[in-house]
Image 1 (cartoon, rainbow, N blue to C red):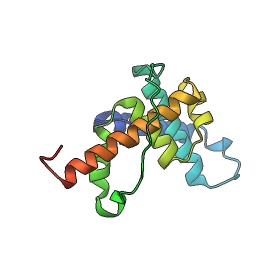
Image 2: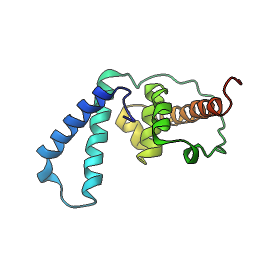
Image 3: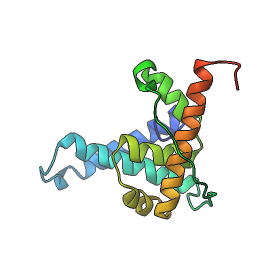
Image 4: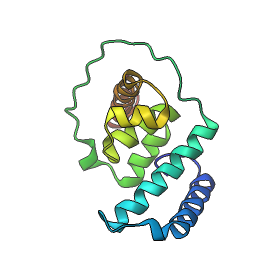
Length: 145
């Protein structure tokens, strides 16, 4: 659900991913955790689904935006609230944010996976953080802005 907005698409991705897990189970060599191996397959399946439906080769204005991360929203928001906020992000922002912040990929890896430049990956992350910050501030002070 972190990569796609709609539950039916997420279920389709999960089913396809688990099929690949079962089909490729013999290729698991025991290097690292089994959970990590499955996660990698499911993340890759999600990214393949997104690549088929969205163009990640987009131009982003290069502005020098500084983001201060003084909000500790993760302590105050429920998991579903965070997913709801992520679902409001554009696909590119949400995908890069998930890969970098949650999955722990580096910008170089994200750029290779999505077929974009490293600077696009960095810009998407900065803009995602800025948009999330704005949405969180609106939740804290409804009607202000």
